[in-house]
Length: 193
Image (cartoon, rainbow, N blue to C red):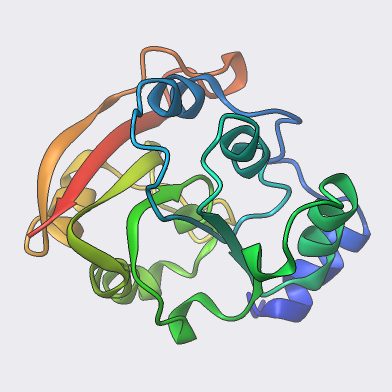
């Protein structure tokens, strides 16, 4: 199975989006709620239907962007947010993106990538962040198997992937996960070294 843009396009067209919770998840909502700087430049890569993006915009974070290389979720977001500037919707392969951000939000993107790309993901995230920029979000905590996406992982694996490029501020089980994900999510805050 090739996890390319056609694969994801097909999943969205068939509404085969079991990861989609229908709303922003509690850990990310509560993180965003404590942010004060509305000028932060924020990216949500592999955005899908990105309830986080809607929430950010609704709460005054107008310098926010979504990126996906499947057209369907971006089209869905544009329909829901018709007044939002087209420049906020980036149709591109994440690994080809070159803009810089203060904050990147991770929500079910990492776990959707082929596990062979995990080190490349860490390097790319590092390159997309401004000095002292943060990568924040959720990572699944269940055994990594061939079956996926989603692909799981462990705290130890994530530390080995990210600690060379990032200061690990937080990497702990999410106490406020939504019910279907309780016990399976790690909330993290990584700051660019």
